Amino acid sequence: MNYHIKIVEDISEIAAPHWNSLGVADYPFLRHEFLHALEKHNCLGEQYGWLPRHIVVFDDKNSILAAAPLYLKFNSYGEFVFDWAWADAYQRNGLSYYPKLVSASPYTPATGPKLLLAPNAPAECRQILIDTAMTLAEKSRCSSLHWLFTSEEETNILANRNFMRRTGCQFHWKNAGYKDFDHYLASFSSSKRKNIKRERRRVSEANISFRLLNGHTAAQEDWKDFHELYESTFDKFGGMPTLSLGFFQDIAESMPESVLLIQAIHDGDIVAAAFNLVGTDTLYGRHWGCREEFNSLHFEACYYQGLEFCIKNALQRFEPGAQGEHKISRGFLPTPTWSAHWLANEQFSEAVANFLQHEESGMQDYMADLNKRSPFKTVDKA
Image 1: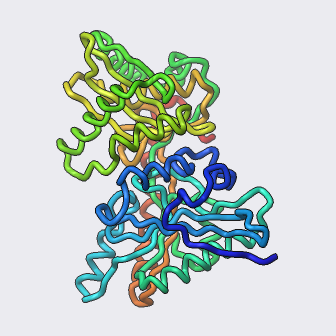
Image 2 (image 1 turned 180 degrees about the vertical axis):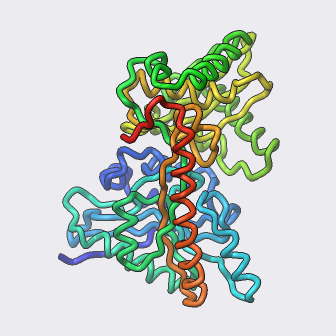
């Protein structure tokens, strides 16, 4: 079969149904609508150091066979697989770490496929994507190529191509067939169960109610209000609020069933909100903001409301975002994540490989130790 490869700098050049047919239906943060909204509403580009360089493979009939979301990066912001120390080491030795190439969904620490294939695509198309990414990295004089939050299968494929595997840790919830939230709590030890009931009671006693909205039911004013809350979180804790109001409004319209906005209401006013993405079987917690501080409100809005949503809608997983050991006591257990890396400089590549080998061992010990803190009567090994 003859292949034609194109580097796409504007994802709108590819029709949404064609991109979405490449196995991304389960992952809202890799859908065409999501990635296009980022590009269209000024969330990427030179201002933030993310330049789209998507790889698309066509057959001889100009049908799309495969693709990889790819970005030319001039910083390490919004990746959640931290390589700042690598960049510093390059700088100390008079070398440039940027630009680099990154395959990821920008600002999204969630596992999903990066080597995207059409159902009828030959398996060799994965190798074509990898080879093309490597060639592009070399032509663009990039220091490195990084595949972030890859699936276990893709991580193994990349490792077999001499990419260095890196293991991280997040805290995920798995649905064990819970009938309702009380049934879920029944699986907890007594002390952990009492703690969660106490937290939920404090929110209820503060006369806070909740409203769950999707793209169909949320009004434009709801998104304006949430965006103010989103920006306020960055004002409080630092960082850069890269996602524009237009981005949120766009995906609410283009993929309405895939967004979940949880509003906390007190005395008729919205005092906090949490933004989530909804996949085929997984809920992804992403952003949060509040105007007033209430005891345990963050836990209720960001975790317990989402858990109830998962149970009610038979979702199998809840990934509430990066980091946070406090999630363990609420039923989110340590879960490995993966990324794969190639560095052009052989000396640094060897040094990073040694570092990652030690980090891997430490990460395994870390997760094993954290699992001992499981709140469940019997550790869920599903």
